[in-house]
Length: 244
Length: 236
Image (cartoon, rainbow over all chains, first blue to last red; front, side, top):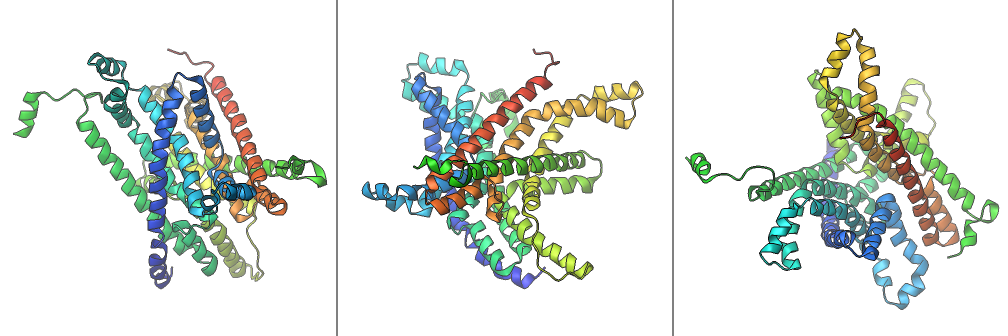
């Protein structure tokens, strides 16, 4: 192990950290919104909407992310004249746009299933109670169904976030220099994969450790206000006893 | 889109793409089999009474599951060749340049992560087997290997089947990553065809459809296997 070399490549590889984080954050944010829409379509009574959502989820979960990225980034080149005519080529020639688009669709497909599971786990009584007090459909979703569904879905969503952090490395195959892209460039020019692997790997592990902790914290905060998590609500007298 | 490009034989790329699909399937099967062996070993370590073995297995699964597969592939591809050349010149005095065979390299890369994920699945399955059954086996006089093969393995296989089905799904999809080191499977073949015909969309679409077909077929296979394995189980 060459520690001088190690010290030299740490700042080089760490320079890719903001790129990785931005890529993941953008795709997760867009993907989550899309996932909620897809989950609602999947659960809707309209068979056209639920069929479309099923097909979307099926296709994106059954094909490798790499194919999806290449299909969008390289594949769009085949329709360049058309895309230029309609003014969309500026987006599709941009590797960043293509990477975010592919990652967004991919995570939306997986996340929509997680959200669907969460929504289906909402106890019937809660929804009936909401209706009984006169909530509109939107109020019911915003105040009852969605908060409970998210709480249920949180652990699985934490896994999805970690998978996305790993998946963002594929953006390096279409010229984006995030952590893995920089690591590959250094390996190819120095032929010292072990040191590079240690530095880049440690960065990913650090990111994923933070993600795990954040999800755990969120779970605890959401669970504290919940009475549906299976635990009995704390009685006033017990609270006082704890406070003493 | 020009579909005559997909013709069989010299005129089109149909047979090359099909051959790519066969390579994809072969590398996936080899990596999956090796991955389950690694996973079973790691699961045994995780459940062992020897602390260093447990630590090693925990560290392995944590690290491998937290790091992108692509990074592991670069490590094995570039590092493996260097290490092997060092051994060849140090031990055998061979000074020529050679690379690792890519099929083997690809298999190892994918087996490393398949092993980490299947370790968790197998460990979970072992823990579900009721302790009383093992005690009963001892009581009727079975020895260690009889207990293992007759009581533990059949049940662990059944409990682990759904989880191992997932591991197969993503091992199959992860084979696309091996294209970056040059194994001519579906992705690499599609890239070659796309480059020479200037029709990238056509060929990546064909690649996507091939993966879709492979995952759908194997999904059905695993469903059937589960039904077969649960044949004798009473449902509540």
